[in-house]
Image 1 (cartoon, rainbow, N blue to C red):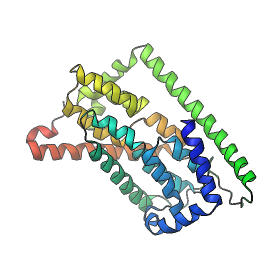
Image 2: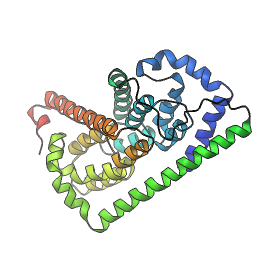
Image 3: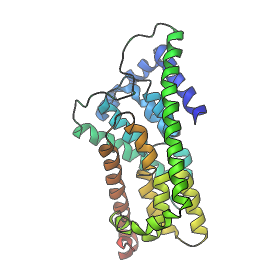
Image 4: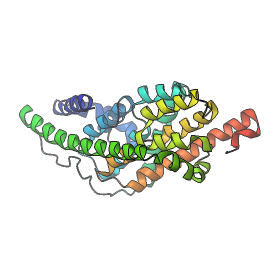
Length: 291
């Protein structure tokens, strides 16, 4: 991950230093104004689409943005990130690559538009994001600032990844995941998901789509879950997955957990039940039955 995020964050600082980022911002400001974002943040969203969340996170810590802008960016990036990898994984478990990719990008933009309408205008400043606007006059200053922010991000990543790996290993060692999957059946029904997806839902929420997708393929081969059920789960996980890691990353920057978690869960609920309505209209009354 560090091999990706460190060069990307340095590149963004160089683009800013040479005025290229300002030029890009000028071109995209008329579009991003509807999202409540400056045009310069477009590079954050575009990077997120193609890479894991750590890459846009590193760019964000190199920018001067408000907490309101960070909240909008956080949700857009959480819904649309690492799509080449994650959409390919979901395609192997029953949901076409372009279907899930277009869905995630479209929903993230819709969420940005909605948040721009409802978020308070003055939400303060983020915790770690650069808020100073002092001019960088030399490449030496640029490298020093990049090094300082990179060390912060590296420390943050190390703590989060270690903690999540420890949590998962403890749950796995004490065989708690299968037990927990039984206890969340009422929650699954609320989200419109079959009870057979409980184990995979937990895995997707704890460790994300990459590892969760591998387990999903294994369970499909073993006949523990069918393609229809995994397709519905894919729609949910496309909107909301790896909530521990994804949320902690942005909470550490000062974003409210209620905004990022609440919105993703709401969007996941809407998308899955919308999918069930489509299935009902297409195939008859079975599309809305939750078992």
